[in-house]
Length: 488
Image 1 (cartoon, rainbow, N blue to C red):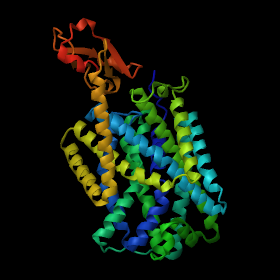
Image 2 (cartoon, one colour; image 1 turned 180 degrees about the vertical axis):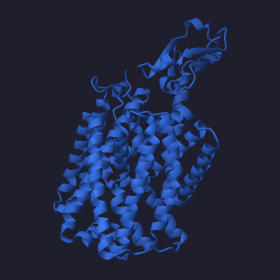
Image 3 (tube, helix red, strand yellow; image 1 turned 60 degrees about the horizontal axis):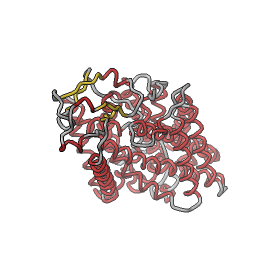
Image 4 (tube, rainbow, N blue to C red; image 1 turned 30 degrees about the vertical axis):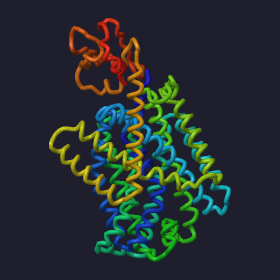
């Protein structure tokens, strides 16, 4: 059996989502936006928070009905076909493989700065990624419990810093004046990075005990994230001059110094370690589940879909993912390439995944409410893409290039197929709502009937990523039907 064990409850799922969302963006973006827009900086944050709601609604709906380790890749496969699903899986894998080491390297720089030890910049990323691999190897249940502890500590410390700052320095009202369009657009695009992560946590949904709690998990984690960001902004408004150049590099340090004085440095060191560790651990676990899901669907080597019998943990995928991420972080820490390159790869790709999620939702969800959510989400995706400029356009271009490559490879494979069996993708079959699935055999053989029926209940219990059916009893194969003999 290759399904993952359902061991994660609603509380653990909520904290896992918070771990995936709260990363290095929390430590930088409030200061950057305040430095550029002054006390009008709340406006792009408010726009981003409101506009991301319909996008999260799409993901919550999909996650509840199609909980899978492949996450958005599975949603795309069910809604838009195997080629799009495989493309999304490739894009998501590339994005996470680049983002997780980049986050670890960012943490290393902070730790080195706080400790005054340059070697910490090289050691911390390796240690935190090795730790993430060990925790993922122990299982999602262990990882989720650790996420709860880390996020509770992180939230308590950051909230304490912001509240003390407001109590000491007083409340400074935000500026209601709308910034210039060019300034607002640039900051808004950057701020959206602080609202990515929910598409990553979707890769853990197969391990949730109750998929009906997924919308609540999204709602609760979103509310907590918004409150935390609001406290940070209000704290900065009250304590720091917007002209201070350090806002672009260490805004939370400035806030902590104003609130805690001499205690600021050790407290911020704990905050940085907790934030980066939680984010890396959650993302590494999610990536291992994505790799497992893609292998189970036949898109990666089958060995990566093996699970440990006692807890059905995909340990092969965990170890390969951990080794890959640690290697990339080691190369980045050695100065072989700039870790900013990794961030530049991931930013746009994450938003592309949101766009694909909207397309999958539009195809699968029915009703007036679904149509309204689809329209609002589509407008959001289009607007952000236009405002973001070339960096976002290149991300969509990369998606199209990969998609064309996947389609071309699929056609080449199908034209050379001459097998005695027909393969059907189990992932799509498991999503079927009806009791039987019909396959058109007109292009396969000159069968007496036009369709074949297979019992879905039996298919859902299949262990293999694909099922094979003998074709010898379907009659002679027409010459023109050869290219249809194998179905992905």
